[in-house]
Image 1 (cartoon, rainbow, N blue to C red):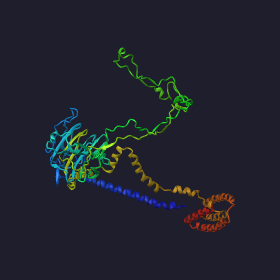
Image 2: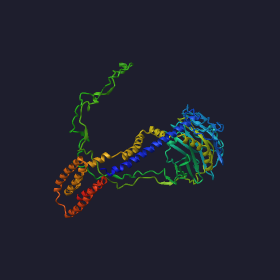
Image 3: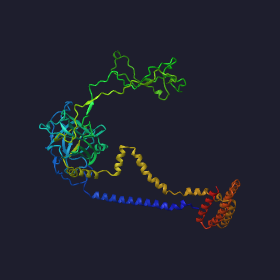
Image 4: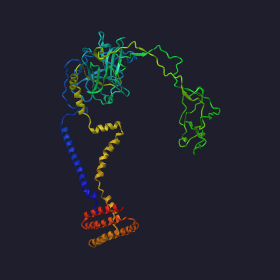
Length: 612
């Protein structure tokens, strides 16, 4: 007799078969597409000598539009518009104080564009300084300032920066004397040393009272900057300063930091109105103690400190196998007396001591002593209890006085004008790539400039990225624990496929074997059922008679169990009569075939539930 689960089995098998056929068809199509791609590749004559295929795009040197104060693409391969520093760095060792780092104009190592060149820092552990004049000085008035350029750490970065400086305008500005202390208005760009990844925006603010300049640092971007230093891709850095005293920092045209020049800089732009009086001193009698020892407390006469704080554990037992006669340290048997050892001057030579190898397998060596434990009777020296200090006056603070250097600058955007852009860098990694500098006042101009230059580099880099499988393998090389995640992800669909498609016929047959019709019949009902089975057995053969005899044996057992059930109510007996009639009808249906047998099973199960 088949259960409902078995009747549903063919549908599950058809679903599984459909999934497998769909997978095979997809694999066949993919194989065909790969074969077609291989054929196309074989017939194509493009073969990169560097074993990398780059996407061919039409590149033309970008031309700025609108009001532009400075632009540089380096595409002509020349550094004629730039000045190398010839000076020395102060407060540095003489052998590295000179700005002698090498600069070159060359193309990218990877994801290059035909005809596109950039400025490359070539030296390591050297000071580099190079600068160029603007077309005209930039004056902070009613228009925004937009500074934008590209950086690519082609070999990663260990320790070094790629920031630029906007050099303050002055009549005596000499670019050949450009060094780390040359006055600048803004410093902007990436910097890294160790595991500290930074994106600087620093401006020098003038104190209108005393005339000194202070460096103001914008808050750090709330993004992970590591990938911009390590992925070996060209990234676009943009700084926007607005006349309303706000700023924005963009990385690859996405805002990563923004704020106010008045509020979001460190140290604060404007000093406090009041400061602590430097001449105010704390009085000698000032009491800052919130609690004091109770002066009226007296040490009890019977106070006993309880001996030592630690005592030997009297319950401790020496471990078995302890080697009392073996020292923990022994002379190194492999040590040899140095050839130049002089006993008269150096004394008698002794081999250095090493751990005794015999003690490695033993609980311990040497003289055994019980371990020390806390003394339960130890009280320690007597101390008076602490009470509230009646003379407590609080924490003393000096009085406040007006700040003699106070000022309030409500428009920090009006910074010192600048007339040159410079790179003054130290790096432990070479081949840092710079390209496509632009300084302007309109965001649209900078965006068009970026789309004609950096946008093409991004397109080529995206086209040349490795496939999904290669990316996963690369990620697993850096993080081996990802292999566990990959295996679980791959095993999950296989496990679900087996779970839903594996045949359960054997399990259901075992369940049917445990099922006996006589378990659900009353004695009178059993006799009727047996008569019908015997009639059917005469027609079907001796094998079925054997099964009927087995059912009769089960019926005898049920008769013994039924003898013990004598406390049924009258309501249960009435229900039993009705059930007997339904059972006779169900037994008639059982002769009509297998489906009738399933209905009989369901009815008999319901009958047994009501009986219980």
